[in-house]
Length: 195
Image (cartoon, rainbow, N blue to C red):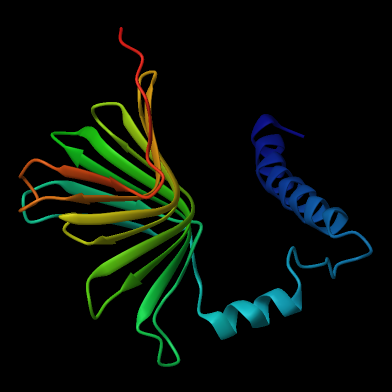
């Protein structure tokens, strides 16, 4: 057999061997149990279809004064069946200005009332601002432009080593860019440690 005949035979045999190897890999990889189990149950699928849940939603927008708002949640249940509110589970809302965080709110649950533009956070509510103040409470009711916020439950505002606690805190301001006014009511306690 001459050199050119050998090359001709190799040009035909090598692609055939490659095709056989590929077919063999796919044939062997299928295994005996081709019907693998789904990673979720049928009842979970039917519950999700009934609820119309959105998993891991992300929202990015801005307020009237230019503050960027980023909202993330574990799941979102939109308005449905006559309900006039949207529910967020394990929610986190960030407020940014010039690419730096100026505030953040986290909670177990949040409901957004579309008719009144009010949002209510419930369960392990934590609000932190860029001045290193932190407010912890059981619930927070606020309007979407953040000119009025009411914390209820065991409310604790801390900044450094200093703390003020009460069962209600109302934060209000004339506009979204005006200074805030803090009013603590019911069982107010102050712990002040001068530095």
